[in-house]
Image (cartoon, rainbow, N blue to C red; front, side, top):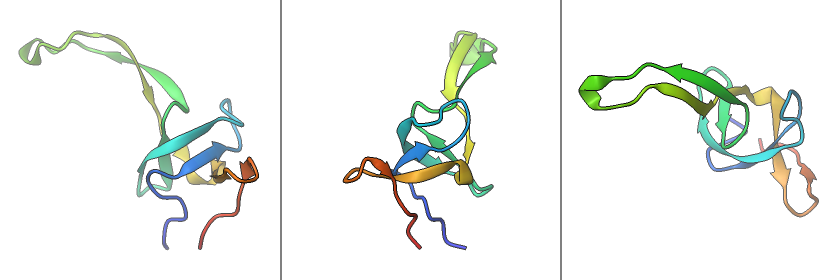
Length: 85
């Protein structure tokens, strides 16, 4: 099945804590999920890696969200538009 939402598409979140927020798709995963810029931010506790000179700490990063929970954003109408086939 072809993906209806592709990389660099502008999408709007339909459900969840980020409902109504818009963002650009960074990555489409084969498990039926997408990663959207600035949406579904989670805090990851990262261990330091002295060999690579990376400090540890709490890092905010985008987590994956189900494709069914996002829709393409139509800039002309300002609403969620139909998905392409």
